[in-house]
Length: 218
Image (cartoon, rainbow, N blue to C red; front, side):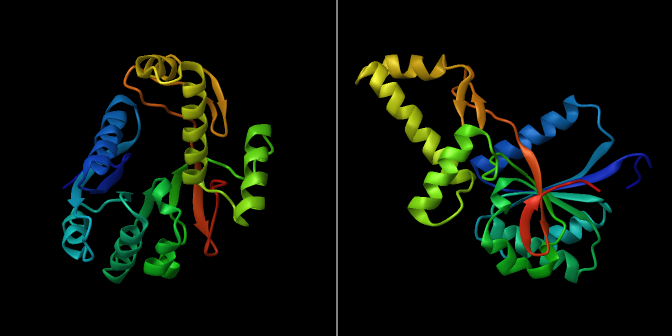
């Protein structure tokens, strides 16, 4: 398959469940909407219990991708990168927040080095809301909070605020959350859309020297 020499070839390996399909579709839609020098050269789904990705990788290798974006769970990301290296594939691996998991290193080892992924929560931030939450979390659990801990915190806080405002009036609770705009949180200002979804800013992280760190470019 030939493609424009000024475009990067992108392949996607996604977990074939509601989350994986939804993320994959959103990514493809966004790439179509944006004017970016990327051509999608392959899209392959995988099962939750998949451990051998060589068949998938062989199919993608025929399209000579520059980038493989992985959507799923960290344990599978590790296997994909390890098996790709064993097959001699030279690609840049990209992923999302689920990459930040010790299972990545358990399955990938040093092959995880250089992977780049998106992440929504910076526990080292000096922003007041984040600093207060991170300090309290560390004191309570003797650990640094990750994005899932932060989401649990904000989810509980929003639920408590909604019940305080509405008591057990569930229509009121739904309306309260749906119409919530600019709520100050550890993710920045949050607002719900008409579908009940909430979005917030992401930044890039990478694996460097066996650690998850902010991506500084280059």
